Image 1 (cartoon, one colour):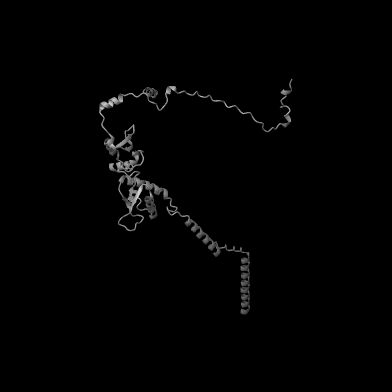
Image 2 (tube, one colour):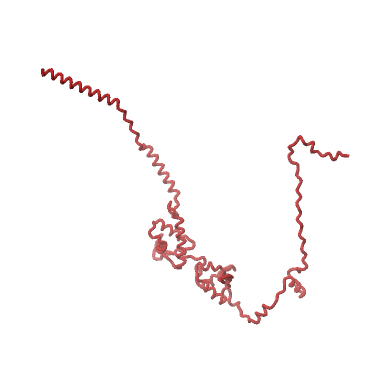
Length: 301
């Protein structure tokens, strides 16, 4: 009996096992297929190599177009030239040599990048209104060494320099006082003194009587004239241009110009009106009407 029950149990177990296997297989077949894995976005070795070569070529092209006279892609050029304008006014007021460190402290640019400092120093050394003086204690000069001094339009700062500058001029043009003030701001008092000493000829403005132009003068040519003779000189009346010619002729002199009274004024010519030129034969388009335009006056009796 027991053997029969054991046989039945084994049969049931094997049937359940086979049924579970079939159910799993069916579920697997009905399940959706998994999507294929997407390809890796990383490029191949060949594409990486070509891209790196292109990048290196671009970098070389950019480096070839670099202008080393100013910082690259910093936008500092315009600002640096503005700073230089402030430096010129600073040196002009101080009127003494200043180191580059003192200039940076005045501009509040001590802590900026080194390439910006180099750019400012380079502009200052090449500027026509600034004189750079090398440091005599150094055998080799660096970009930040030396001193800077304002270079005026006219390098005159006292009376002797002004007289020497005017005497060495090869032309007779006057010197503008505003150019003298560029390096000698308080020169007007000295100009007034030299004018009083007859060493300068000065023209002045009508409104404020300020000195405008100066020329060199020779004080040995200045002589004192009594006031009596000055009054007589100013009382002498000069003849008019019309009377001057007749008085010269009466005195037996030949005038350089003719007598204005004998001048014959040419009558103004009337403007002739330009006659409109007759229109020359142009292109005739109405060929079928030529017989209507024909002149028959010659055939009349």
